Every structure is written in C-alpha cells, then in structure tokens.
Figure (cartoon, rainbow, N blue to C red):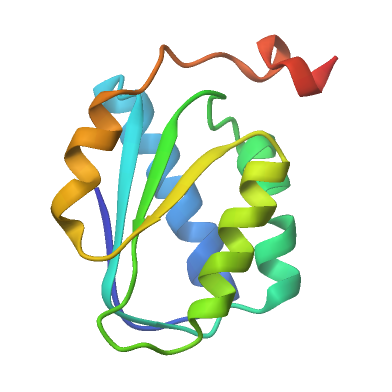
Length: 123
C-alpha cells in the first residue's frame, strides 16, 4: 500500500510510482492500493497523462491492479478520473474507490501479472 497525505505534486507522483514498483516486486503482489484519502492532488494533467508511460519505463508489471482511494475532501476529483481513463486506455487496470471498503475484494480478483513485453499493447 502506498499512502499519501497533504499536497501531492508531480515529483511525488513519480516517487510513488517507484515505491509501488518496489512493493509489488518485494511482495510479489498482483495489486497495489494507493490511499489518497488524506491527500490533495496538485499533480498536473500533463504528468498524469505521462504517468502510465513512466510506470512502464521503470518496470511496473502489466496486469497489476491499481486501486486508488479518492480523497475525503472533494478536491480536483476530475484529475483522478482523468488518471483512471488515461491508465485504462494505456492498458493498465486502474480503478477509483470511495470509500475504501470494496478495494480489497477488487484487488483479490487480480490475474497474474505480466512483464511489459508480454502485454498485448507492446506488440
């Protein structure tokens, strides 16, 4: 699980992507929970657009499920929706949750992860 609080900026989003990669690899996880319930996203739309490419670049495996718990404070929710759309369009399995209750069931349904070269979009 990656947890964030306070203001989240572009550089934080990239650092959290690397942290998620470490956690997935270290625990051989098929999913990751990103808890932004106490965060305020100031990540730019441009950064959100390129974040799926960055995730592939740093080696986040395909097929992992990414559950994002939305902030309690309804601030810039459209940026989270944009992130979900961009990721899904790029082939990543990302879903937004509010509240955190249904996250664990959804993550438990994850299929085995694939290496980047095995992803159909990489061909």
